[in-house]
Length: 165
Image 1 (tube, one colour):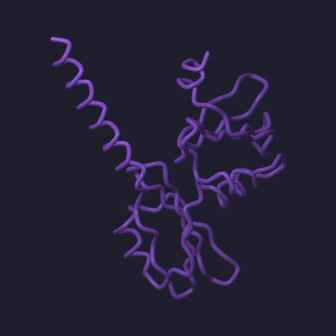
Image 2 (cartoon, one colour):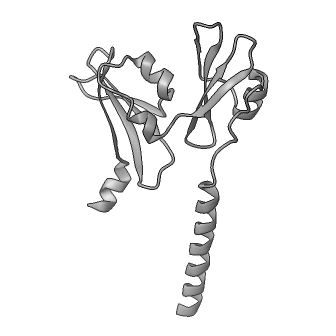
Image 3 (tube, one colour):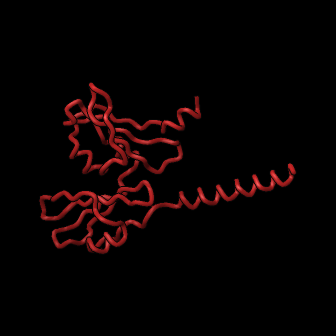
């Protein structure tokens, strides 16, 4: 009986490694320069937000539904992709600073995975999940009036905190 259990456990463990490795292979391909918005939407889905740019172009946010990916795609005035960036990463998170407005945060890293109230004396808490190997997420705490960032930090996911205690 123990041999069967060991073989089954080993097989399940190997299957988990394969599934996890496949999941870490990456998200959707980055939209190509020169593509139209219709082509990008076919690849990434419906845009979450659009911001006009001074040159007549647009900055468009796409949240990929099958994983923790947010793409900011810049279109020129003719509607063609100029640049596309997956923005949920620690480099961009480090740019979120106290005093930034909600719109500045949205333009930098897009909409959060989750929003929640953070208590009577604090504003909203925005939570972003992203690809990493450390069981972390990124959180932005806004001022009580929700006008500006009060603090921002990369922290452990709650279930990881409990597991490490």
